[in-house]
Image (spheres, rainbow, N blue to C red):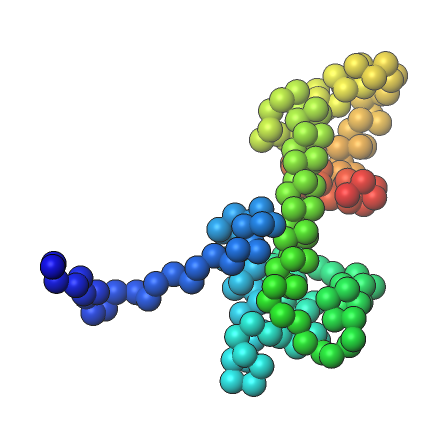
Length: 179
């Protein structure tokens, strides 16, 4: 019988196994890690255990994931995952909601990319220029003056310049209520 293999001292601890729920929710390993990290910021293993946070930290945990929840949205989520108002949220419930938010974010990014590409004629890196807007107006059979198109570019550009980056474009879509 061969001798047992020893783990040399100083090696990092084994990686935490993937939560099966994360796999079922179609989260990538990186997305799951991101969710776990945001959740762990607010855990108190000595008081609550490693898989529970206080409900009052829900909004902060989502903020750590890059989501700015409104008060109403936070309240709606809490009604769903803490219906008895116990004041605690488990990792599994947090993971489910976070997975939905991440998937929505991914869909929005795809929508922005597609729309931006339509304006730039397939140049995904942009920016949208006066020439691009002229072409779009022509395709749509809209008679729009160059002055109006320039005003549109200045309004949409964060730098008030004559071109619109993808980030500027996304901001315009949000202001218009499209996202």
